[in-house]
Amino acid sequence: MAARNRGRKLASTDTVNDTHVKENTQRKPQEPNSTDAPIAPPKSGFILKLSFFFSIPYFYLLFYHYKIEQELKRSILINAVLSLAGFFVTLKLIPVASRYVLRRNLFGYDINKKGTSQGTVKVPESLGIVIGIVFLVLAIIFQYFNFTADSNWLVEYNAALASICFMTLLGFVDDVLDVPWRVKLVLPSIAALPLLMAYAGHTTIIIPKPLVPYVGIEILDLGCIYKLYMGLLAVFCTNSINIHAGINGLEVGQTVVVASAILIHNIMQIGASTDAEYKQAHAFSVYLVQPLLATSLALLSFNWYPSSVFVGDTYTYFAGMTMAVVGILGHFSETLLIFFLPQVLNFLLSLPQLAGFVPCPRHRLPRFDPQTGLLTGTDDGTLVNFFLRQLGRKSEKSLCIYLLVFQATACCFCFVLRYFLAGWYK
Ligand code: UD1
Ligand code: MG
Image (cartoon, rainbow, N blue to C red; front, side, top):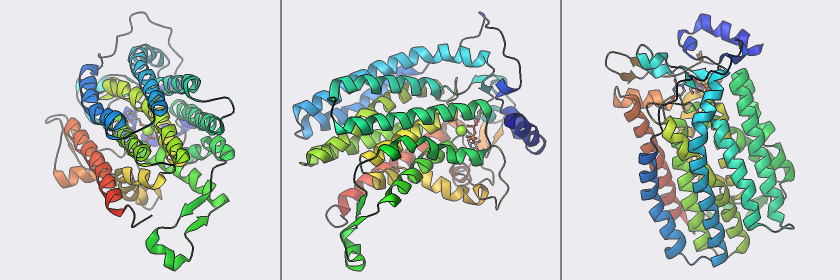
């Protein structure tokens, strides 16, 4: 009901809104139709070549550069093989799921193609549900290869999975019911509850060395406030991905870039450390991020320009929560926030509209010119519009590439920063 009322209200104030259709609360579902048009084939060849190229430095670090215990390498490799299988399963499932969501009228129109024939195509929405399910199956099966029954990690691992699962469910609920965005903001804090309640790790933070003389202590126990911080991190990661969106390939692309950076960071930390618990924390992150990356790459091959499927809030929330969870349990949330630099900038640019000081339309996307096929930046406070205003008009595909290169630059900046601050900062 809420979705229906909101749709009507927005339709009168925002002309762009009428291109965004999630109608399953508004229309009677159609009967299954055997003549459903198939979606365009995935660009999986290109994605596989790109992944192969980028996996070389990763496996070099894992197998040659660092001396990592055989046992740990074995677990990471098993997880990588499972993830690869997950990639192919996801590739197969997305076209099937697309037919089902279209039958239930869960689709959107591509706003950045409005005025062209592509803009009239019903693009299946919420395909993140496939990624969420495949990811959870992989993560659950993997426990068999790594953990013993009395492992302390198993409790937190399963709590992390419960939070990710809960977030995927709430994301899907949002896609179906189109909940008001202020409600969207709090959904991740509810989904984070299983992890927050089960978390039994330390609640201390190490004070940066330059600040120790002023604070007077080296380690500060935050107690309950630490849990609040964890919850806020989950809210930030999920929503910041969701609002840095709306360009074909951007939601999944940013996740792929950040997940790759997390993996490299994890292997570097495992390789450089002698502390078993510290290594375990980073290995834990690898076990969740490899399946996230593999399944996301499969989704990207359908979502890359021109998108044949949309990911939905199901995916943006799922991906954000997975990365927040590994940042929390791997104890590298500060590093994660630097990987998220474009999302932080997008959030800061968005603040006036999010806080209600400036009117916030349903979609804060650029203006598309069907004649030239180029996008022009609008006054809406997003990084997408900011890039267009600074760099001039761009096609959707090249704008997405620019934004992803910027994301990768932020990740490289983080590695350089860590290198120079090592020993001095902490
Ligand atoms: C968030 C943003 C909104 C942005 C939207 C795009 C805020 C507060 N909200 O809203 O400004 O427009 O994401 O995802 O910043 N779509 C495309 N091309 C794409 C991806 C999506 O046209 O590549 C459109 C489709 O019509 C799709 C819809 O966006 O159906 C999905 O929007 P939704 O995820 O529901 O928007 P929000 O997350 O609420
Ligand atoms: Mg969204």
